[in-house]
Image (cartoon, rainbow, N blue to C red):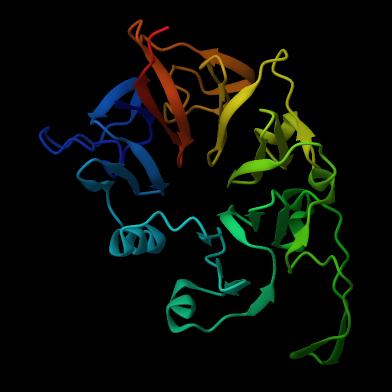
Length: 312
């Protein structure tokens, strides 16, 4: 297997092969950066990317991100631990979603709230919100009410009564405030189960068992979508994998074709363009026996896991 990458590399986060000299220049085309019998991208952050190989976890760049450091310590991808752009941390354990105002509070076990919920298998954080996926395929979101489009659902404003200028007392809120986990009902009405979520920047994606993808959010590249889950029609093609980066998105079809949209100023689109306003297929110089297995959009960079296709 091979790991190919392009884009932002200021911290050496695209240099997994320790046998080569350190080069901090951004990559503007997809390049093979690692070979191993077993490759899986675990975590990406601004300064480091964490990949599992046959011999264990391989970090490129720096583990300045607290969650990446925790993954290294636990030797686990920790799919139910996420951090948002406001530094809040969300977790799921023992039947409860918990939120912490900082990683330090998470370490001390001092949560802002804990809420009983379904069995959660994945939590993703973006700049302003969190998205959680249950084992039954239900999706819930919560976060900053000023960015309602990032929640993919209707919210009710929390109401406050001011007893003094410096003290605000919460009066009431009903069952769908922005700040607490609530179900994205439009996804619950789908005939097929949600199997994966991806979220970064101000955009979130959900992938179904029927190979359909839904997007919601605001800002570029969200001009193509809206504040409620919107299905992607990629000329009728089925979608195998999806990943959302800080300002770009990547799709892998069941035919193992890659499509991308968004900003490319750091080379994250794998070609010399500043921006792609619409989806475009990105072709790689793969060998006949190779195909793309999975995709990962990091912070202004992109990672692809390449495998040898089974003989027909």
